[in-house]
Each structure stands twice: as structure tokens, then as C-alpha cells.
Length: 158
Image (cartoon, rainbow, N blue to C red):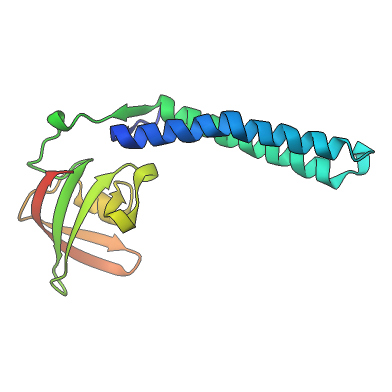
């Protein structure tokens, strides 16, 4: 079964650029490294050649994985997002019930997550706990730091 992920237009374009970079520059670099190692003599005892071939295999694996992610990616249209409850691309203002700290996060796909910019993955413990909640509801979240409770204060578009 395909693992469909939802992205912003910007996030999907970033993945496509990364894939293009790996296909062009990455493959060219690998070919050059293999050629340099091959020129150093006997391939049966050439550790540099073996390492270059292994690195090439890893690059091809990354390319295949990224191609699969992109082929299963869907761009979310903000007009279709229901902001009556927390969903992907929702900007959520939450309050920690224990210490009254207020946070604002945007829920995004795993690949787009960046805590520094306030983007958390829908697959993270907090993201999963917030999904489907409405304003005023309390989300009980099993985080690595222990059980936490967050009150949903506001939901808007990212």
C-alpha cells in the first residue's frame, strides 16, 4: 500500500530539487570517484574503489526512496482545509496545562518538519495527539518527557 504524505507546494518543490540534485550532481560525483579509484590499480585490493561503489549504492537507494516519497506526495490546497479541528497544515496555538506555557505550531509532513520554524510532524507524539482536536479540547500526549496535556486555544491556516 502506498504511504501518501501531504505537503505544502513549497515543501514538495524542495523535495523535487533535492532529488534533481542527487540525480545530476550526486551521480556525476559518484562516477568521478569510482573512475579515480579505478585508475589506482588492482580492483581486487582497492578499498577506495569498494568504498566508492558502496557510496554509489547508498546514493541510488536514497534516490529511489525520494522518488517513492514524491510519487506518493499530494499537495494540500489550503481552501480544502477544515479549521474547525486540527489537521495537516493547521496552525495550532496550544497551552501546556502544567506550566501555562503557550506554543504555536504548524502541523506538516515528516520531511517538512522544522522545530526552529515552528513546524512539527503530524507523526510526532505531539502532532499525533493534536490531530482531530477542536478549540477548547485538551490533548493528552505521551511524549518522551512523560505525559503532557495541551489545551487547544486556536486553529488557523498556516
